Amino acid sequence: MNSYSPGRRPRRSRGGSRRWGDRPRYQETRAQAPKKTFWQRVVAFFGNGNAKKPATTARNGAQPSRAPRKPEAVEVTSPRLYVGNLSFDATESDLFELFNGVGHVQNAEVVSYRHNQRSKGFAFVQMQTIEEAKRAVQELHDKEFLGRRLVVSGAKSSEHQVRS
Image (cartoon, rainbow, N blue to C red; front, side, top):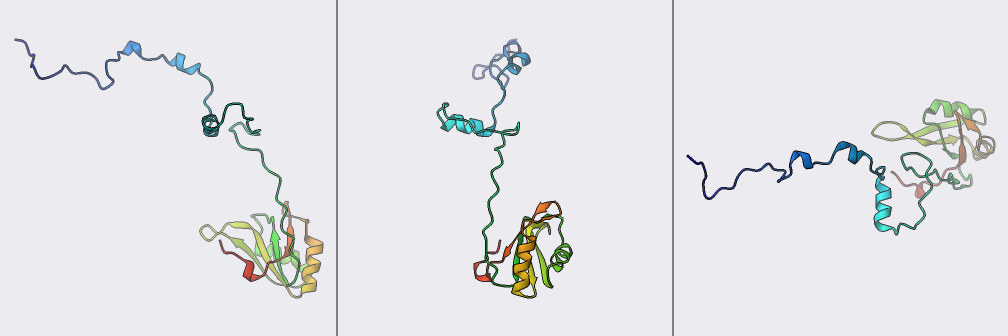
């Protein structure tokens, strides 16, 4: 007896009518051009192909590092000093010892992230007098400390500070 039912179609696989032999071979797909990075695809999509591509330094398409930004020079008008480009390994006691060689230090505070307590790379040091603070800027600015050149300048007044 025939099992044909008039309203039903014969079953097919979900892939359609494609047969096993019709699929592309692994070797054929491998010989294609190297895969473009995300940004190369974006530039190719929006750009006109003739535009100069940015110079890359790394193999993964990373941009070259830009020149370091010069810190804003702040005049010393209070005993509070800003210490920038600080090593992430520097502690408050390290700063206390460093600045004690110049004058009397009242307080040293390394600014850190709240969630993981890692240093943000800068600190504030409170000296006893404004004269000691000025001397500390003269002696310690651009001095190497724990492998990095310090940026020491007067701290901005509290009305200019923005919390992050």
